[in-house]
Length: 126
Image: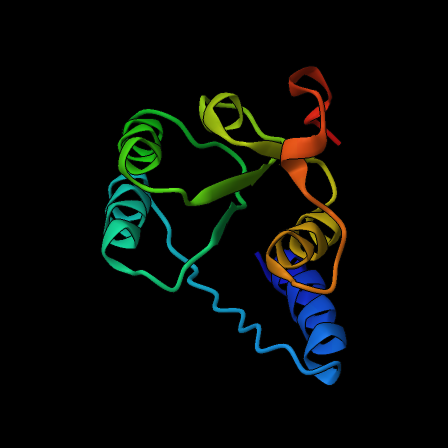
């Protein structure tokens, strides 16, 4: 989690120097029920644009909450490459946590040219 935050905060600083207003929040949560509840709460948080899930194993209730969230929201979900079903329902899967943080910020930045939607569906794993 800390490495994802490192990448995201560093990249956000670069964009904020240019006048953007990108903020990065982290929420270290442990346990399937707690993570699923945190994902559910994001549906009521309008400023959130990208969710990056970082852990060692995620599936079950978390996957179900992500599916519900994506059905009614345009929230983008990135995840680290990990066992469990989360990687299958994520929009982008990244192996390096620092790179995942950087890509998440680049996805929402106005001055960046990265957009995961331009990647072919079979190339959304890094």
